[in-house]
Length: 532
Image (tube, rainbow, N blue to C red; front, side, top):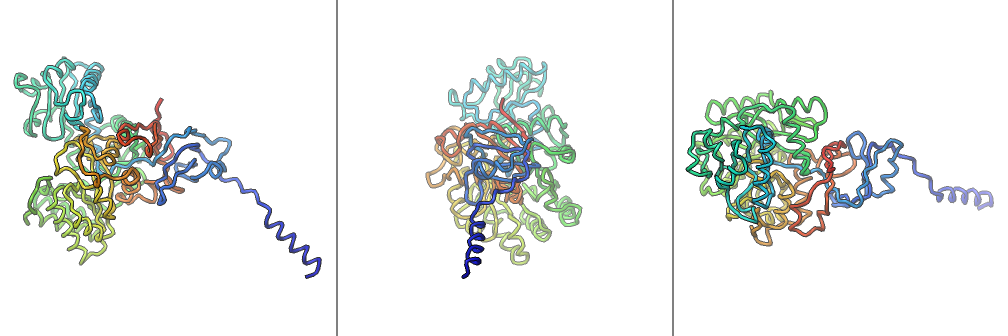
């Protein structure tokens, strides 16, 4: 090699080794910096910072990587080491019904003191006009009060609310009312505050019922704000047509970004041959289509009861007779042929097995059903053999914190077995009548295995890790909603839904997970809640 060629080659090599300054990236609207960001990506990696532009994450990683997106108008949110998780998703919620309730409601979710619960009812009464109804419509259990477990007495409810009717419902089993409320429905207060069974509740419906009512924009936004405060950014409303009208939510979504994403099942009535035929025409006729959603709102699939008379209970011991199962089969086959996901209320072992048999039967003719992520909701009595069959058929499992509201053995979904089986599974609430709406109560229950009364609800092998529980409440739920490309984890390109926590989810003592409190919730890069 000549000297000239040698010097030329040396110059080229030297030039190649000189670091080239990285070009500045497009400035972001927001940088969230100096945190412990649990991305819930496939590696469950933990990042320092992330950048958001136009509602989406444009960078996530180290301080240096994200700092390239800082511009003169970029807002910096300094986390001071706080933990960040993706926005939490509830895969099974009665949203529009709960909006109506919330307008006059006291929520006792996670309130562990009876005296505090009564004080909250008294405070709500004090701020309400005389005569206005005050309600507690579910989400609590008498066992949760550590100072004095038990239901409410007439004397203490009358003391808390002497001039306002108060109605307190515990799931669908028991209710309590004060003297003013009892007299309003023609009941003698001398009979006491406590009532058992739905028949005893019915007279109160004309005063506080939600059936087919329409909620105002103000009421919807107020309830969305309540859900943002507990870290929720997306819910799947699986209610019936009678639970209220969804049109006002659709109007809100069309007007601009909402602080809470609300997806829902197709509303129809199928309880007899005629209404089932009408439902089939809707499902197959093209007027309604699955996955008709924006990023904010829309219909995804069918459920929670695709055929009304098949209303499963945890204590069911036999399979459904053909008079009921025949319409279930017909609707399911039509759903598979037309690409509808199904999210079905299945509590007992016999019903779960029968439903998996049905999917297996349908898969012979319509193998595409395996891609539709049909979901067994509640799944209290699911067995390991059926979990294995579900995995092979692409059937998913949705578990809900209504199961933590008491300690009966039939209400203990085998979370550990579900996790080990490899099925797609997610956590939700079934809020807000039979369960609390706070997802941190659900996460704490899944990790500790203790019910709302603090009692051990299942064996060690049926608890799940913090990582598995968080995955189940975020990215797995996004998959159940077919939204995993835009929601469920904090990755580049996804919508910026996130929650900043007051303590570290991964390191707090397990018993403190339920008490974790969001200090900031962001939906699509917009702050939906910020603790002042």
